[in-house]
Length: 272
Image 1 (cartoon, rainbow, N blue to C red):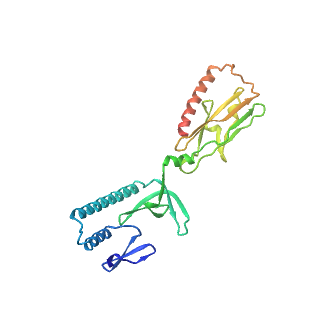
Image 2: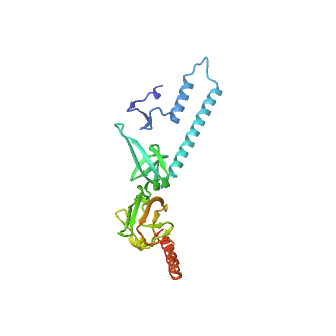
Image 3: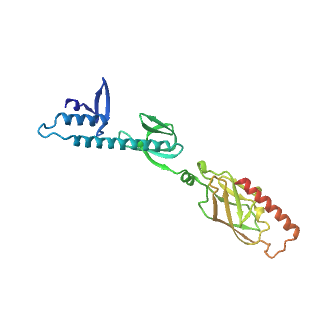
């Protein structure tokens, strides 16, 4: 019985084996401890009412099943850890004072030590038990994708022509865009009349010189990895224009227009 009585320090049981000290976590029943309990049970059983061999075999069988389940669980946990390489995760740790800390980042590699897996995140190793959540890559991109958060209803006065501009968000991280394509009522604008400055898309006033009065919808296509397209957030209303829809366009102008449309279509391929 004295072999089962060990010193407890800071919630950890000290066990001597071959002159060295091994530590087992509190409330954790290891393989050696189970066998010692079984031997002790056999040694101190009631001689008038001894346990049968069947009972011992049942106990050993139960222990064997438990051991197999633990091994399978460990293999499953380690496999899970290996599959997390390259994934975005959040690790949660608790300090000695009880403060909860969460660290997010990609898993660079998995370190195996004595059958236990640790994840390398942002230059530090964390136990697989500290894993709080796994984040889908597309979700990360969605959070940083570009867009237009505020509607803009612009007015172009043909008597006082000015450039038209509206605010956009170009995105963050891997979803950040660095260029756009702009369509006005499904007509693609040439890149020479579109510019971006301080998160403002500027459309040159020359685009509207020969446009009739009316309200036109603007569509913006960003060249981020998700090819974000924003519609119904920007309109441009043209007033005081002397151009009408009934004006005829001669055949030469029409051919030039067709050629320009073809070149503009090629431009959008370069942007996106």
